Image (cartoon, rainbow, N blue to C red; front, side, top):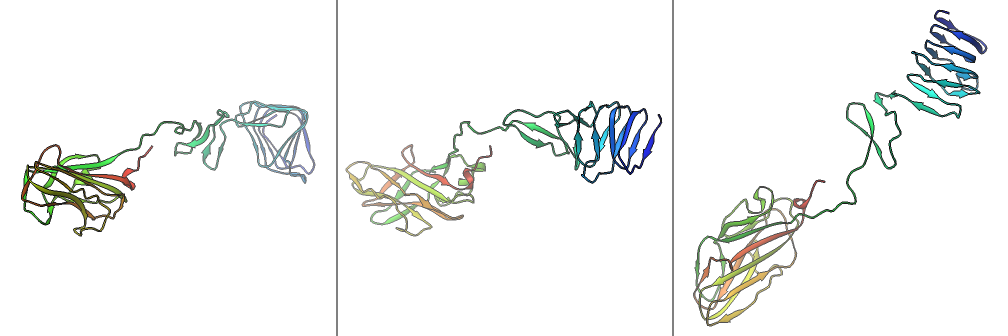
Length: 284
């Protein structure tokens, strides 16, 4: 039989059809075989356009259904688009809907459906989770350019911490501006802790170190350990956890009861540690 077009007012029973058939109404197949393609555009009052009571052996064509498909006693076998079994289950082979091509397999337990960005979907195993994450530490340390002489009986700022000894931030963000012994807070930093240690030459009388924010003394929690000996001292100070904003700055202040020299050696350093802020973000 050649290609045919049917516009029935009642359901048709087709025994054999060798060409293509376009059914504008309903199709009832009683043990018929189709080697062409069947386009189903109509619908019954029940809303089911295609009724299969026998066996439809699909050849090189395709079955296109614009409504529901009800399976009776037969089966639709090996179509390029749809395979429907007698248990009324549908398996889509190379289905494309709304421009998206869906995979032909079910994937495995726990997989998710992902896209390649070009309309093709596939099942993918979700990565991450359950692994080990080591947080990144961001800190910087300055040392003095050279020995620094100070006078007695006053708090004095140490302006010679201008040598970058370490900086684990991206592009040395924590020490990108070196001037007057300052740590200048860059963007991406919300909480910090500051520490300093200074070794001095031999001198008599007290020696104290503290940390100052924005050039104003005694506005932040900072230790002030008072040491005194007949030889050289090593003073130390650190702050509590401090909230900061971009362009805040920190310096080291010292007090000495007598003239002395601050020694540029391994016991003299100025350090900042970032505790919170986008600078610590890590992309997994």
